Image 1: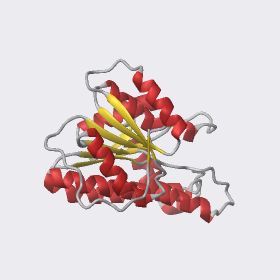
Image 2: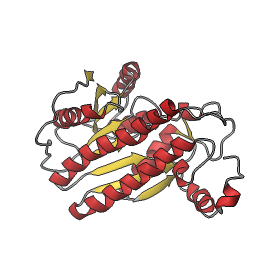
Image 3: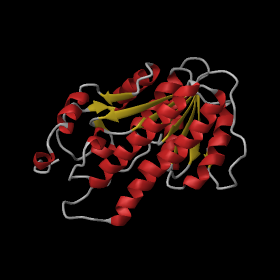
Length: 267
């Protein structure tokens, strides 16, 4: 296991001569990120798993070591707090070199603290901005530089249906996901000129630590099923994909509710 430090960013990104099966998953210690890492390793990918919690990365590595897998599959880990954006250039460069290049980068890190109806906690809100938006931008920019230089690669950002409207129950979480959607769309438009694809994933309810204690949830799926659908969308070069896909119905309805009605809803 490796641990991130904060040296000066490298001058030149790592380059891969040809496409392969090398992936970097940020936010890989649990939930969707861990499920993605395990699926990729089982398919024969070399995967770099990045997360803040070392003990969970150790558990992930042990689980991946036991997986029946196609030839070439393996996992390396790196401990990193995505709120420390200044560490990203050096760590990204090192992991890309360790894997021998990169073909796929997934940003799955996120925080969604519980928020009371009368709570306005700036510290808690800024933490969400640092992790959900700042981390996405730092890792997305690093991936974009490399993929643009090699003229191939796929960047996947795990957003949320929560970014479709301003919900009273989680004002800043939804804001971070809306910002993430716009950033990823801008990267997709910019990088499309050089054969690089950017995929925005908008999950509904997934059975992870984030949804624990919420009671009975609509269309709840497992993290592994979410990972399967996410990889399917990435391989299909989908620009945006709701996971599971029927959430687009909910999103369409929500977007078309007039503001004077939406503010009366308990969402």
